Length: 604
Image 1 (cartoon, rainbow, N blue to C red):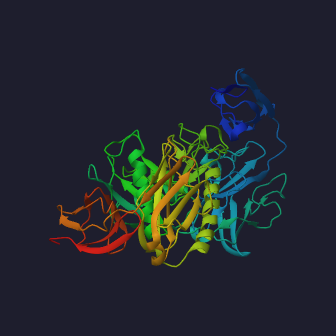
Image 2 (cartoon, rainbow, N blue to C red):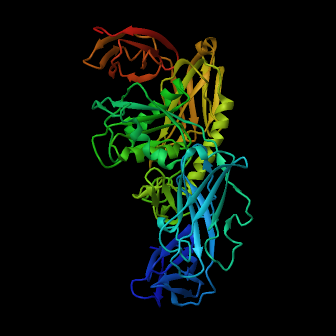
Image 3 (tube, rainbow, N blue to C red):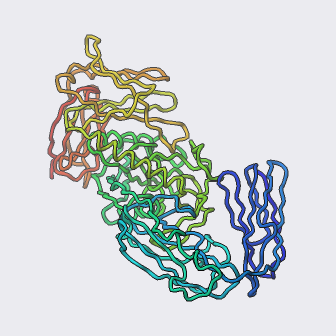
């Protein structure tokens, strides 16, 4: 599918590489070294630029140096570049470009930097004629206008006639420690600073050309605070393998690619999700795990929650997350689990899918055709260059890195959220946790429960309304909202969970909850007969059995009393929960009202 462009290159000696750059619609950019037919192109105008090359000690120039080709959807386009020996006007060195990258960067250095994060500097020096020289390059780093460090860069081999961004050895490079990357950083770069090479122009050796240090855009990034939660799926007892020992492996891809410098990751109490086994081709149980973890997060902590599961397959659904939310779930199959986590957190940070691999809900604004990253990436830790043809991690294709589009979008989202979070932090107080989802056109309103936590309310109004009414029909509260989109669910499920601040007196008045939206409405009322008694037993090492009358108490919220974290939403009158604690804190919900109790596990 798509159009094609056949490029014919001639005139170079056998074995010599051309240097032809083709750019076009959708951020398309390819560096070609020989005759090639490009396929799958978007219709439109493409620019073909022939750069000078050196071969066997001779300089060659391409003709035409620049040309346009019109690519249609059905009609193949063709273009020809002919190289011939070119005369030189004398040797001159100049700095064509300079940039500092920490993960991905444009040639003009338009991607902002993150303070206190290691980087990699590339300096692109070009020569006006074929040569065997490689002049020194001096780099000066300034903090607030004061010289902080000076470095001399060297490389082997001749200086190229044109910048070759796709070849790491063609640039003068420097690993830049995080201590140099500050919000008041500026740089000044000079080629042949000691003037040891005779040049036709000695006035164009500095970058910037003015000789004044260039201020770089460096921003502070908030610490990424996340709880990694080992999830046990109740139907098969499989537990996600995330521990303090392998925690850093889950974070590795995120730290390499995403615009963050510091992570505070802790291992949460294991969470038992009352769901059927996870399926490779269905997101049904995945959705339920995600929804339960979101309610747990809203009840207890402002940090991000990442549930780690252990499905009994190795290919298929591997993760699920909210777009613009704070909860995600991924499998534990390392090393791929690290890429899954980086993808799912990308969703949490406001990103939709890149258009590669036929994902659900692709980003219509993604700028590069085929979901490629479009510009060059760099893995600072490994010291490896990532081709601009790599695929963005927000798609479903292999050979992943991050595009400048995704990187900047996440920077902007996290910066905005840091300000909002600071303004919205409230005092811990009595609240009612109300939660549910919209799936397959059906409204689901889960049993609410009372708690003490920080309020968590909708950021804006929307097409859905959640109302609480007293026995006389008067309204106790009303919340208008837009639910969270589940990015990796082709069926389009949406979820919600709020902690509505509510004094005990107001809470006692509530007799029913009603959820209304475009699909209709659903109502839940209190159970009859008051809270049930709960029988607690040891179900074996690391497991606790619970039995109760579900007609009186539809749901039991089970907590770890050591940290208050919810470790299960038990239902159906009988449940086994993964827990090794001697005591458990239980919240017995009749769908609206709650009763608290602390129980001892027999034999512990």
